[in-house]
Every structure is written in structure tokens, then in C-alpha cells.
Length: 316
Image (cartoon, rainbow, N blue to C red):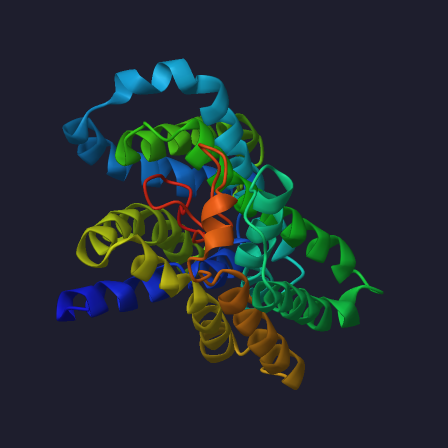
């Protein structure tokens, strides 16, 4: 990989590893609807000039139903659930739970039409990853955190399902217009509740900085850099940074928010990371693999957690 590729890779690992930190800070001063509206609205405004230059908005009209479903599973639901969950959970724990997306993604693909068989290594990866989630979540299920953990698990399911919709129903749509439309739709949906729950006093500078960072850096800038990374190193290599994001989330939470680094977090991170790598590893081509090819339009089970031709890897 070129030096430019490594720089882009490092930037993406950070930019999509710190949203959990910024969400944790932002929910201290604003409501969940205000947070989601600020993030999606600012991201849409900043991406709009680039999307207009790219063109292709006309192609989106005939897919509006699937665009709405995709937006619901990738932005509308997850970003609100994440924000509400982080009122109770630490940012590092949230980031680790989200790391289960590649694992659940393999299961969802398998249950929704992927005909590829899972070998022993990939089954072992699924079990390892799920064990990591259990190790992390189990100590908190008997208290007030159970609801928040459930919210994050719904986010994981949404993030795992949205790529399938993008790959199977939105395959012919251009990236930037699709992303901009989804962000704009989400901002409009959250505008009324944001107005109703608007803070009576100006939030602190810390909270405002977090909101600005979520919209401008973790959404608009991150998505542009993500496209550049794909152009530079290709799809498969570009998506490897998703395995680094949880570590960034944990480190950021520990250093900047003084969140505890416990043995449970370390063990669960190792299990989830190893499980994700094994569960999404490509199988060597065999005669059986070629015979049992997946149906046209199906997302392969060994595909990365986000289809690189679309915006299903939106900043998180």
C-alpha cells in the first residue's frame, strides 16, 4: 500500500473511531433529536456541493422506497439509539459492541439468501465474536444498562442489514448523491423533535465542539476520505480499518474521558476482533465454491461489513 494509502487508512481509523467519544460528550448538553439533527444536517450541507458536482440525483427517484428503508436502518434509527444508549454506557463499551457488526452481517447475509457455505474457521469466528459480546455485556444485564445494551444491539442489526439493501436494491446509484439524500432525509425527520427539545440555554463550548465534529469531521470529511481510500487501495483493503475502529474508541474513551480500561474490555476486544477477522475471511476458491455460487444480486458472506460502492459505511 502506498504512503498516501496508509495516511488515508490511519485517518479513517481515527475519524470513524471517535464518534462514540463525541456522542458521549454531546448528550451531556443536548437532547438526542437535537444531536442527530445537528449531525445529519451539517453533514448534508457540507456534502451537497460535492454531490451536485457529481450529479445523478435523478437516478434516486425510482428507488425512494428502498432509500427510505436504508436511511432508517443506517442513520435514522442507529444514530438516535446510539446517542440514547451513551447516556448510560461508556463510549468505549459502545464502540466495542458495535464491533460485532461484521459478525452479525455474516449471519444476516446467510439468513437472507447468501448460498455460500461457511467453513469451520468462519463458524469459529462467529462463535468467538458472539462470545466477546457476551463477555462484555453480561455483567451489565441485571442493572439499568440492560436497556442501553439492547439499543446498541439494535444498532448492530441495522448496520448489518443496511449493506445488504445497498448491494441488492441500490447497486446502480452514485455514492455522493445517495449519501446526501439520506442525510437530508434524516435531518428533516428529526427537525420537528429537535425544535421541541431545543435547549433553553446555549450548550457549553465542549458540547458545541462535539456536535460540530460529528457533522463536519465524522460525517462529511470522513465520507470524502473514505471514497479516496477506496480509490487508492481498493475495496478489500479499505474496509480493514473497521477492525481498528473499536481500539480507537476504547483508547479515546480511556484517555480523553477517563473511562476505565478493565480486563473485561481487553478480553472482549480480543474475542470480537479475532471473531470478526475469521468470520469475514475469504475462503479459497474450490470446486464446491464455484458450484454453489450465490444468487445474482446477493451480497457474499465474505464481503466487508459495508459495500464500498455505496454509502452503507456512513460515519458512525
